[in-house]
Amino acid sequence: MTTRLKRAVLGLSACAAMLTMSTAAVAAEEQYIPLLTYRTGSFAPLGIPWADGKLDYLALVNERDGGVNGVKLTYEECETAYATDRGVECYERMKGKNGGASGFDTQSTGITFALTDKAFVDGVTIETMGYGLSHSANGAVFEWNFPLLGTYWTAADVMIQDIAKQVGEDKLKDQRIALVYHDSPYGKEPIALLQARAKEQGFKLDLYPVTAPGVEQKSTWLQVTAIREAQAVGYPREKMYGIWWAASESDVVDLGQTAKGYKGITIHNSAGDGPVHDAVRELHAKGKGAENRDKHVGSLAHTRGMMISMMQVEAIRTAQEKYGKGKHMTPEQVRWGFENLDLDEARLKELGFEGIMRPVKTSCANHMGDDWARIVQWDGNKFEVVSDWYQSDKNFVDPLVKEMSAKYAAEKKITPRSCEG
Image (cartoon, rainbow, N blue to C red):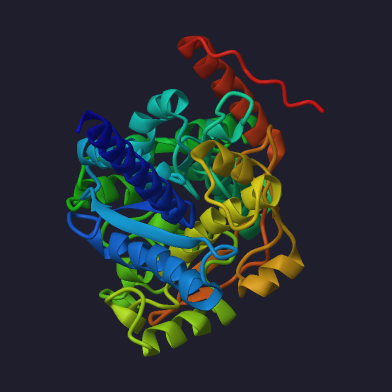
């Protein structure tokens, strides 16, 4: 009986081992992508189409391509309501699921600040397209952060370039430029770049913080308009620029003609509409994708969401080229993929992003890749592209990245990696 019992236990152990192997095999065919979103709270009008765009593109890759080289993408949302503490809770709950998270698009600069130190320890990628810590573009210091395609510094720099183009380069020194900003990490981020530009180019910079959630701004705008014009006239919309997160249809559609002339900046050309949008519309026609279906497709926020997920998927694909096609990629391997992205025009065309994005290449030293932007203007009914392509002036941006990342490394006692060779 003892012998039979031992054999039975051994048999049970063997079954358990086979079950474990079977579960691992299934897990190896899937890639887990957590989605931090804010569909509720003060910023939901922006957060909803942004989240839908992220979800729609991942659903499209599964439907159209069967995943990434046969590896199915699995994903789930975690609602943060743009609150930092809730974002951290989502991260802690999701980072280790299903073989490890493939990276977090935090969808919040405040959450990015809170998670950056954790990412170093946990080995989890923080993907912040168009937001986050601007100096995390230095991959030698910020191994796990990827502020892809542009930062608040590059955006502010482009805005100054466009203002100089409108008034004349030689007259920029005579201008008085005001930054009306959300009094949070997100709103404060452009200040360093603008101060550097003002010091070098001689224009007067005024800073006006707006207390969260930013609904009450009347007193602030009375100060701004009093600078050059009578308060009764109101501030000319043509002289107002909004960062990409303040330049979506949801920001102006209810105002209609009242907002006519208002300008914004795009991440690459996120105002464009291309084959990828048509593919998502076809997906929706099948009853798949985001529950809102075609409501937001083609909007600036939805397109940015798709761009974010596309970069995530291409990082996984790039990692597979090195570590094995058709295999589950670990968080470390996906990080390598983010660091070695090389999306040329041909690849962007294959993905349906032709005209929406320009070629992007990342490296150990450069975790932002290539920043491009265009200026859009509200015509009373829709945003129209009103500029050619811009790229930030590295003479202003790069010294700040170097200075601030070195300061961060010293404070956190981080030894920068060598990115040579």
